[in-house]
Image (cartoon, rainbow, N blue to C red):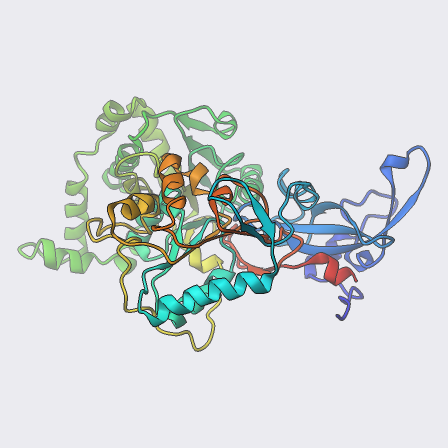
Length: 532
């Protein structure tokens, strides 16, 4: 394999990594990544040199996809540590503890290194090492048999931690003519995704925290929220430039403790708070009239809902204000416990921010309550009212800042509807009803000829883990279970095959996430192959 060329910087920002004369460097200069020297700290006070190849990759421990540098010892080709990649546009060289902890995962003495086949009863814990050929022959034969017999709903691939290979995997499922993709999203973020998608078809927000004048966060976020490391950096950048921060969170999180406003509502009342803010925006004329007239389908709304009224934009504004007249700050105060004057003050801050209003909600308020999808829907309504969609300092739809592969010659989607994924009695389900799978199997709605779980641990993740154990131990319901995982899990214990997967430094993935107001692509790669 050809070695990576380190003769030139990998990214324009690499030029900024040069240490000042006589000063300290935060990161090794990129032109020295091929041969970097450090003293071994374990040998102190002796000065023992170690020489490394620094190989970039992408963290695999959450969806943020932060950049890592693997320090590969040139003497024995061992990975000594992982640090941040300073030219990664999303993380900019800064990582949480999960990034450097990749070394612990790689060296975990209990990690799975070879394909294992069950030789006892499911859950008995008896395993035998087998070859990949044996595993693939068995699985392929079962898939082939199910396809030939048109048992197209009996093949299921259940994902817990997707990478960008998801698009290419979807290509395989389409080619097979099956509706076989399952996810964990309905116990994760489906509610928030639905609220956003019903607005503009894209199911995540992408705020420009750096350039915002007002940052509105629902849930803790900086220390534990979605994309928290890249977001936290930009939120602090924005605050340093004068942005105000409001956190709506029932608990006093670390972020709330540093915010300008902390609103602690009763759980489940967040949508009422947001609608009251929208009420204030409308009543006090703080909305962006030009944006609304150009981008909101007000004419369709008037024609369908109020054909008897004059079909003008001013009529629409009057109708809109009347529609939200009941969501007063006093109403929201009764619902949430937050004082009405505080709600008004925060609403005015959002209105004054105008197009520089950056907002975000993901799980928490949206996922933990009946009707939680309305939280994201109401939050996006606030963004739309002030014209902060796709603006500097505003909040964009996710796909604007995320690269998604579009492979050529993608087979058409399957014509078969899988009732065990999206049952017809839940027509508004935005993602697969994955947590109901063991119950559907028990009811006799179907069975699985081959069931893949990929970095997914439903026995532990879902609240009814015993139901999953019951289903996974019934070979009449799940004929063959292949668990793809780098480590042992509660679910792997009940599989027929346990198949090893690589960590961040051992696999190929194309990565892109909407971590900030820009689009980037990162590459996860097996670093030792590059270092050879």
